[in-house]
Image (tube, rainbow, N blue to C red; front, side, top):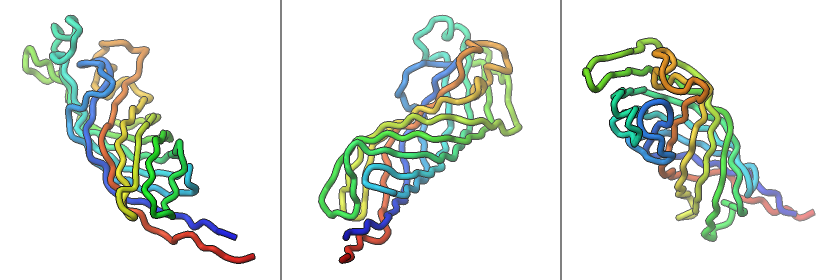
Length: 210
């Protein structure tokens, strides 16, 4: 009888970030700032794994980059030094058995719960004046929606390309709520897109006779 041991993955995320909210463009995937993080996965089966990550980026957006004339004329810009920790579940569309040495590739989706924090600065680019510079740390929760594709490029390394939109439970990543502008009925989003490179370790499958 074959008893499948668990296997772990640990590595890095490198990519970019973009913001979707009350300031700047509303493109879904349009990285404009670098992002990096650390990622750990605990593979419970060839189809699913638990994942824990820490990611950080300077989330920025400017009305001058928007296609909307009203935002161009307003001319706001913000920066938020955002950091997040995430705990979630990843599901593979195809079996991704890392106990086998053959090359495998699979699309995947992931979700869970994120806790993030940061400090923002809101600036009027037309007058070149700070509208609101928050010195206290702002905290909130986000729901990640991640899609990607991955492959084991060597027996020990897994390379993946993924993008993940975070729906936040706040409308104040950019300071719009405090300054009372934008759509107060829509919460903010931010997106991380990039690559992950993970090193696998753990016991291989154990085959025991009944």
